[in-house]
Image (tube, rainbow, N blue to C red; front, side, top):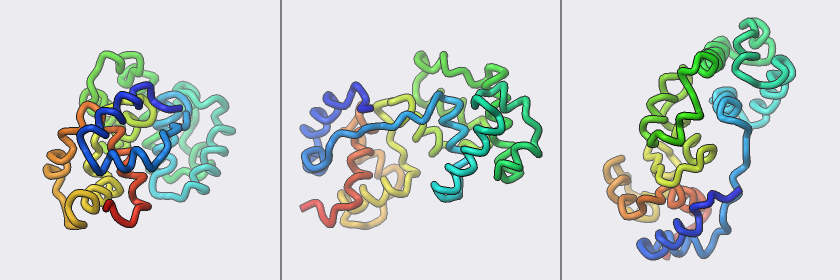
Length: 204
């Protein structure tokens, strides 16, 4: 599903950046796949860390069969050995249990997020074991559809920006932020097109 802000974003970016104007013409609008509610999406992110997509899907299937409906309460109720049997490492068991407990206790409360800015949500999420800033930023872009996220720690975005704006030479995070400043308040949209650009040979 395309974020509602996308037409305004592409118009804004095309006026301000010739690289993005070219990419917007070349690539179709995105269809963001819904991966479930906030808890399920974050749990999937933990499951998928440092393993292949195929392995993550297999483990998620066993996990869902084990807990029934994937809810915080159902995960809290499961003992660690039951989750280990699904294919989780001991560390990932601790991570997903911590996530479930924080949702169950109300420490992570999605209903409050509409009133919070991006940094406040990131701060809430990175307090969960196993969730770093990159995961939180991907969640903001793809689940919450926040329009102005620039994930400067993302290697794909870094490589695309270096290729498009710096002749392939390395950029610092601050330099990436400076390049991206004119894209605000639609840096998520710019990020998506730059990810797509990685298949491009040059930006001519």
